[in-house]
Amino acid sequence: MTDTATDVYARLGVQRVINAAGRMTMLGGTHLSDDVAAAMAEAGRGYVRLDELKRRAGELIARFAGAEAGCVTTGAAAGIAQMAAACVVGDDPIAVELLPDVAHEKRDVLVQIGHMVSFGAPVAQMIRLGGGRAVSVGWANGVRPEHLRGAIGPNTAAFLYVQSHHTVHHGMLSLATCLEICHERGVPVIVDAAAEEDPRAIVAMGADAVTYSGGKAFGGPTSGLIAGRAAIVKGCVAQERGIARPMKVGKETIVGLLLALENYAARDDVAAKNEFARQERLVGAIVDGVAGLPGIHGRVIHDEAGRAIVRASIDVEPIDGRSAAGLAKFLTEGAVAIFPRGHHADEGYIAIDPRPIEQRDVGLIVSRVRAYVGR
Ligand SMILES: *Cc1c(COP(=O)(O)O)cnc(C)c1O
Image (tube, rainbow, N blue to C red):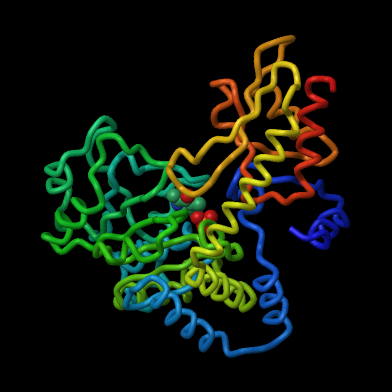
């Protein structure tokens, strides 16, 4: 984030935040690269036929994901609602205007019970918004293929698979199994892959449509996309005259998203190595900065999911009432609020994620950790 961005928030009297947690919607998602921010400003100053821009965006998104067709959305949440609507009513203009009411019964959207999650809002509610009836499949401690086969009936409009760390993984059916069972019965499979990094994998496996957030892995503005079979994407776009109207995407956002996707597709090994080296520098500086503090131990840890991310772990010994959770809370309470990753606070450590921070943030983070132990 540049100083100008910080000034904009300060002028509104809104507190500056250092995001050391990773990609967090509640802290503003990602920060835009300079070229994406500049393209959005330029797009905002001009006029364009929005339909033409959206059509072109659809073509570029299709290419990005290796799909037949694509479209822009406000996010993956809107993507779920629009994909569900496309499976329930297609692109019939009268039915589109009637949503979320539906004049027929074929509107069940099946979801494995471990995927009936809330990502900040319930997946099931997004399905209802699109006219679907969210029907859970299987049991919390296990879903078997026969549960899914048995759940498919004349009222089944679609099956939704959620690919995410938010879901239960143990005991759920794999996407490959769900695709096989659903496609045997002609049931379309739609996928919420909001934060996934590979934009082509799910389409390549044969999913009928998939939605991603633009502002998570791909580093774009707050936005999203749908990619998939042409007939379903057509149904998703048709919702712009109905439930998706309050999910309208502006020209600036479309332009910013498309440039972010282009940059993401063009990222190469050199860029990845540079980013990893940058992370190692920042993490090393934090570990060095807290070295020797009483009851505090800094170390470098690797991403649990095996991605190319290193983080600074700060272990807090329980001396004088100190704890990892106490440190996490203390960091958020300074003049500049610092948000670390707190998932492992119960195990005695917090982590600093270097992806969203800059060199100038390191000194502030270290001095706040020192302040916590009175140094
Ligand atoms: C973030 C997220 C969403 C919502 O995505 P937005 O782009 O913020 O609308 C939906 N599903 C999952 C699994 C998510 O992680």
